[in-house]
Length: 101
Image (tube, rainbow, N blue to C red; front, side, top):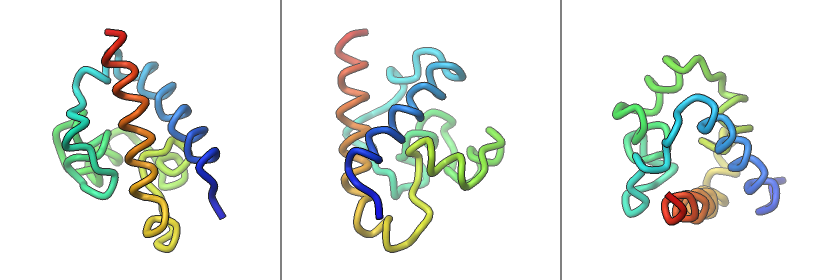
């Protein structure tokens, strides 16, 4: 079972991935629209301007990768319980980046 701390660690891994691959990615995210459950309004969906499913494939990210990077939760029960929290963690981290930019 996941914890908030584990989700934070995953998001931090996702941030490291984006820093390496997408430069100043945080500027591209509309935190008011950010929603991990939305294919277009999740982090990767907003960055790549396409549905998450297609963006994930083009980035060659496996289902394990996207879970470990905090972009998505695979298990339905975990998604139901944690998606809102995961979205809020991403929002907090992105706002911090946007304020520093």
